[in-house]
Length: 387
Image 1: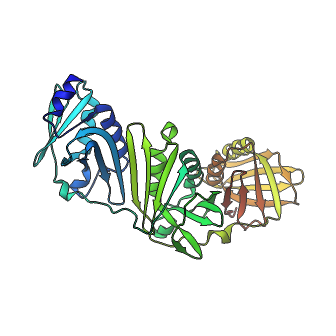
Image 2: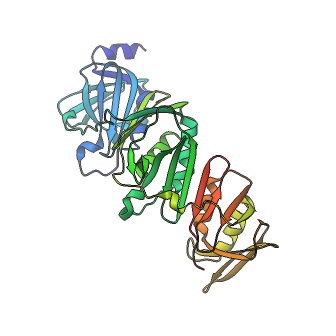
Image 3: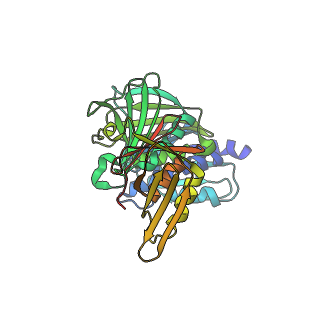
């Protein structure tokens, strides 16, 4: 601690190495490896006397991490993020790191070793405006949000030409807050009670809501992973921006992101309201049989045929080059003979989302969307395939 006290008298900012390491690990989610603008390789560091704000951006997302520090109120510089993170991992033992800014160099003092790194003017660092004054602000339990996001993110489209599907639609319908994602082949919807204070902007198509980009969904998934999920998240959402703020072990994190500028399609039109027939399978048995039969296919996601009758069900895969596979399934069924084709990958990914011993499919005909429901407000819709 004596070393830290002596450093404070001469340095512009001093923070614990542990907190800095944690902060730069968070910033790594938005500071990309290859950038067309050199300034985006850097993190901005700003002091306010008792805290150090470390900011990273890729111009679509910005993360600000606040950690405790002895930092001059006028301290403002940039730090080459990848290089500094390497030093935090590998430099000699030091509990505190002192950072001092020069015109074109930033000095990092690890008590026994001092490093000088090139830096760029903080005035060149792009600033991202947050949600505007008309934004809605509300809070949500971190574990509830993380679980809901995880149950819909797998259906987000990666097809750039349909950019309005490249994210998760946050919408409110009556007393429900819904997260919806679709890639045109499948649709996942998670409903939950509407948070107090939520009033999302008009999204068109008769809905209110916003489209949170796939990249931001992925960042949130990483930040809220495992034991890192905070008790509560605060959201601020306008028509063009979303901001999510929450504490973490070493301080406070604020993620600000642009929203997808587009209109999400009327997803309610593809959700079957009253399927004519229902089939209930053991989830583990269905997964095992789909995986086993898919081994005969040389193409990932090749279609399989599901046939059902009052005596049970069966899966069949035919591959002209490798042969065929057949597997019987136990099934509870309330209809006559029925057959339909599915993409094996989509079925397996959908079943992985569900945390239940049995799964029920609702059918109308072999060319119509298939409905899968879960007791916790989740719905899945799967488009069939020709086989």
